[in-house]
Amino acid sequence: MGEFLTPVEVAARLRVTDDTVRNWIRRGQLKATRAGKQYRVTEEDLREFLQKGNDSREGKKVEALAA
Image (tube, rainbow, N blue to C red; front, top):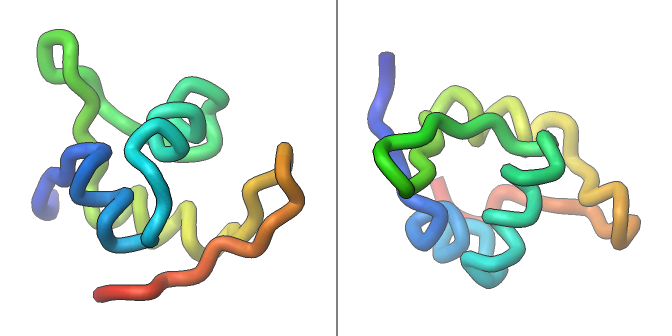
C-alpha cells in the first residue's frame, strides 16, 4: 500500500480547496479512509480519481497538476 495523503495535501496537488476535496470524499467520488476524525487518501485512490477525470456536480475536468 502506498503513501497516505491528507485532504490538504491532495488539494495542494490539484490546486483546489481542501473543502472541495472533502466534498468529493463525502459524495463518494474520491475514495478515502477515516483515521479517527480525519480522512486519508492513498496515492492509488488519487490516481484512480484523476483517471475518471470529472467533478460531475460542476462539470469540470480535473487534471493532475503535480505528481
